[in-house]
Length: 376
Ligand code: SF4
Ligand code: SF4
Image (cartoon, rainbow, N blue to C red):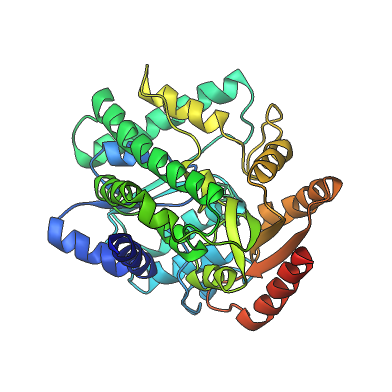
């Protein structure tokens, strides 16, 4: 019973993150830095004393942002700018923009020009990750962020601040991995909507609070395991998806999500940062070691091969690509990955999503047909 209450609370917080953050700020007086994309090292933000908050799509319709962005900008970028222009992000003390795709880079310029948050930072990450010079450059760039934050808060961010922050983030990732593993071995243990809320809230709740909730969830394993159910085992691939309607749809179509490769899922918590040695170098090394997303280039890591191993390990019966509309990096990646899946006789379905304009009926028809094909 207690697990149901925790899961309901997390789903509620995940559905209204901005309202929750506004209240948090009023209650605690804490400072909040927003960031885009899991390539931003939230450990440095947290080590500087801020609450790191990952900015994700809101379901609002776009009106103000369309005056600044081309209509073919990705819907995450459009909806975050819309929220900021409407004043829904006024609780932010600043924002960090990592150089990843074109959409995020251009959003940074528009944001700086039209909004007045006290702190604004471009984190110019390398694109190719496999050379010594890229590692050297990345370390300098992370140092530059540390110095920029130090200047903003007026105090030194010590190595110990960073190590404590890394340890706290590692503890959170470790708990998320434990929940993920249990979900894979007991299909249906957490519904797709519940797991999405668990991961989404990890990206904006204080890590201590979130760890406490996850420890409670895991400590009542038997209660949780009794909820496991069958259904077709599906694996999700894509960039950013945090929309409850999409996960409710998956839950309603006799599907159990047994694994994923989403930036709002596995990729957020898959790799820890070493607590040994220099913390900035450790952060750089985690970034380089990670299986790259389509915005980065590392020929030393076989992205498709790693993905296939994880799909096969999860015993998924099919794959659903969740593509955010106008997300070019993932759109370019899709034919390549689909081809690799076909070589391994793994069936897949593509669902394109867009905040505020989800064609739920059409998506449901296609998803049900896909599940029926896999069942037969
Ligand atoms: S696909 Fe890459 S750049 Fe885009 S949100 Fe995910 S990690 Fe960031
Ligand atoms: S990687 Fe895709 S979803 Fe992420 S900001 Fe870029 S275009 Fe948008």
